[in-house]
Length: 424
Image 1: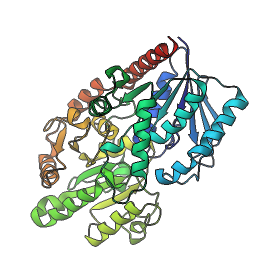
Image 2: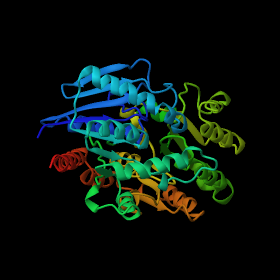
Image 3: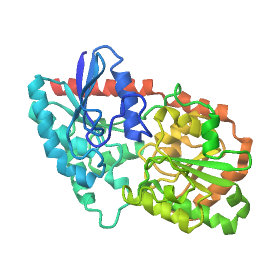
């Protein structure tokens, strides 16, 4: 069966081209999935996204069966859903104009995240096409932010899209169970398909220059955080725990160093006053955390590395003694899989699918967000456990369980199943 897919990623840059910096989980997902799906006979994908980089506009042909189409959809430097929501109608109109001008037809619309879902529903409804959604994260699983104007709007949109979609691909069993139970959906409408991990990209691989820059040495325990600097990623409670160790466990505090990959670009020394002031305006959360680091005298303990190229992340995972994921919510946790593939143990909050992949004492530790001492105790255990981990076993376990090829095979089968039902 030939299948032409209209894939929509309005909110997030798909980062399908190599060399993208610190790609978020959804960007990595789209990059890996699109490449593998279009590598199969009869599958053609057009990815529609807004212009995120003024240097990347128009149509980019990545292969005979994969294109990325950049359309204007708000200021290029804006990622805030509160602002981007206002540009959804304009993006829809530009997409409609493009489809009509190019005389394009598709078999199915596949949208990612709720903003893309709103675009996808319009396109699918106008063309009588089935709509398939991957939310990546639901508002129901995110901690509420006081005064957040987008929360109610997003909840209403997600509620509507759940009903409008012909099928939903969930990244976790927790989300699948919630959707089926809370919305009383037939079980066949929601399919849980885990992402994969690129074992050819993520493997133990040290880089001396990077190790020196982030001050890795035998006398320190390097803890790595990779991700967006937003409240739900839990960096604030992590920093509070690290600060508290100065009094309760000075030996652990003395050895510990936290490297944060993500956030604002900077070429300045990470411990300097100048770098710590970067991001105060561009990202209020990042600015607030940098200020906290200065206030608590953690400048020599916390390194804001900024974004790095995705293909270079393995050097950071490999250099770290452990990776930490203190998130309040995670649909899956690709950072977890990448770190484990590099043989690095993971200290993670007990949320989403991470609880099913982290084996305490074998490849990391889990801590409970409901227990204020749990993160501290887990961190102390990880630091004190030292070199007793088995990196080869950690890597083998995760790479045998998660592959992008398996994910793509399952997703394609599900898309064809949805398409067959829509045509019957």
